[in-house]
Length: 108
Image (cartoon, rainbow, N blue to C red):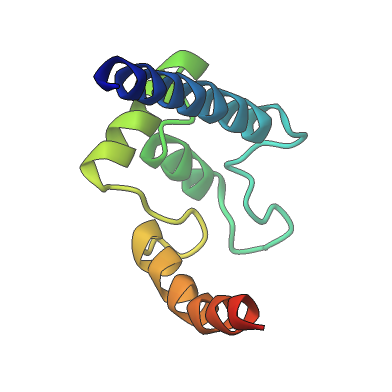
């Protein structure tokens, strides 16, 4: 029984690892540059783009970006690209809004 649980946990970790690689690559293979958040904004200067690229490690090779992604994920230093708020805080707020809907939907 313990070996079954151990294998199951290892399989789930491997699956999560590959899912994270695929989701990371989908974001980076999408057309456009992630640092060009709003290129039509007249207040968006070249210095702002460079600062954004450095802040989110977009100036590094893809494999280093992936390592930074995991480092930031496990240290809790994930921030939104749009408004620089912590991602977990934003997810929690939306979770609290969705929870009553989930409960009512499950009961029905």
